[in-house]
Figure 1 (cartoon, rainbow, N blue to C red):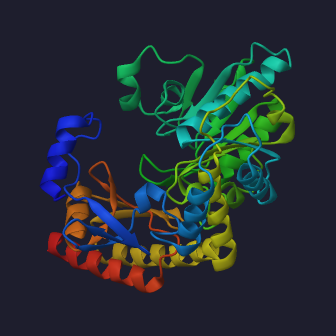
Figure 2 (cartoon, rainbow, N blue to C red):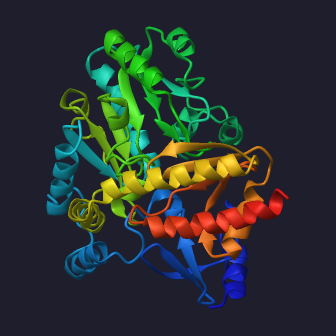
Amino acid sequence: MDLQAIMQLDATYYMNTFGKRTPVCFTKGEGIYLYDTEGKKYADFLAGIAVSALGHGHKTLTKALHEQVDKLLHTSSLYYIENQAKLAEQIVTHSVADKVFFANSGAEANEGAIKLAKIYFYKKNQTDKTDIITLTNSFHGRTLATVAATGQPKYQKPYKPLTPGFCHVPANDFEALCAAVTDKTAAVMMELVQGESGVRPLDAEYVQKVAALCEEKGILLIVDEIQTGMGRTGKLFCYEHYGIRPDIFTLAKALGGGVPIGALCAKAEIAAGFEPGDHGTTFGGNPLATAAGLAVFQAFSEENIVQNSAEVGAYCKQALEKLKDEFPVIKEVRGLGLMLGVEFAEPVAKQVQAALLDKGFVVGAVGDSILRLAPPLIVTKEQIDSFINNLTAHLATITR
């Protein structure tokens, strides 16, 4: 179908939850490149919002999926699933977790983390410990509970009254967090780099103080690694940058390389809060999704993907910092690994985004002032150079 026909079909039958989308439809991909209905080639510097860690058409992933599709798609968790057990082993082997539960998305994984924190204290007869502290400008998902956990009023307003028990405090304000702690506090939940509000890494000292406070007070520390996990920040998990050991952390996005999957990961003592019947899923951890996760881990191991994220991410950030020195319209460059944000001093982000798309580069924009970059973790320095050259050319046109 041509683009106009697809757009008309969408307008007629699809719920209008995304507004007027960017007028492009991609039909195939290879490496970091995407191709639209007209055959135009684009360098993907958004990776499906930090999902396609291996890019598009990666042979390890596609081979594993083809083989699994030929064998078995679904059986339900009433029965043992080999891939599910193997992927849980991979996550535990490479992390501070002891146990894993698989869901279908990041929101579901975070919902599971909230439930686990609550039931953990319930099973310990501490039924008054029900509240969870999260940070302003956070984003934890679209379910009713994760919307309540999200620290952005624009996502919450239509759904009030919100799920009770959530309190939001300013990021990097340790005194505010301390003041919010009560005898009812069960957990603190945070993203170590806030992605949806503009790629904002938390201060290391702040995070370490929060972790110490949680340990001192018997409060669970939940780290939302939906976007930061699986190599995005230059380490397999972002908490490694901060030298902390969360009680619970969640994964999704890059874990399946494009196949929907989420993971709730916890220390053994905490995970024991879930007993048979307390939580479950029909599709979560099915043979296909977990085959994808295993393929992602295989590719990471064989191709040094996480190391590439760290090295090429640092290279890209350095190049952007040089642009900041050259073009005062750039206010700040921030992020870790290949999760980067460029904040402008003027509301030009959407203009820059549109100009780059015209030149064949897919990037994100947060509001009017922040450009968001999250390319596949296989991106090369040469591909970064091409992006920087095109960004430089456009910046020159708007700063004359």
